[in-house]
Length: 178
Image (cartoon, rainbow, N blue to C red; front, side, top):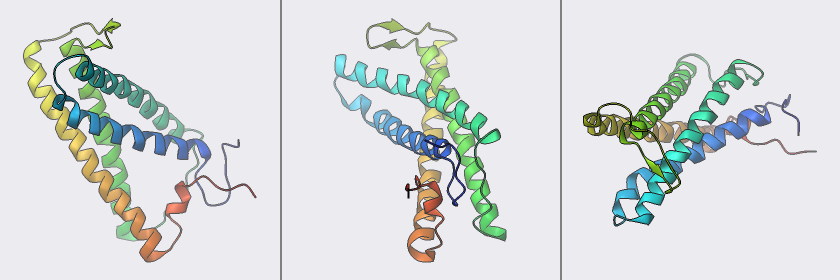
């Protein structure tokens, strides 16, 4: 599987990291919104354990994604000129910023709480437990911000695909072998 592509697509690793990030964000957001709906007990603990574990996985994916993007990842020319390019760039940087903030706050929250993960391992409780509520609030705000900006991002991609029919969405699709 080639990591490079010369046909107007991003490289396969960039594409994979994009879609892994998107999937993790959606799953983490859904778990974060629904975990407390379950009665106290093993199911709720399991959902929160999965949320925390996947949050750590997202942190690793983001770190790798930034290094990949700064290094061997394929950059493509701007899809839009002028103001649209600026809006796209700001949107991408805002997504990265919000992702970073949500991940850092999520990790801080996990350690301030001292999460028990699946009953197998407990994160050490670090920091003042009084910080739980404010950190949780900021983490939720950042997560909701990600979802709003990601929906705008997805809407713009769909506009490119269905209204402008300019192939921008295809840049993030795995190229077919031919």
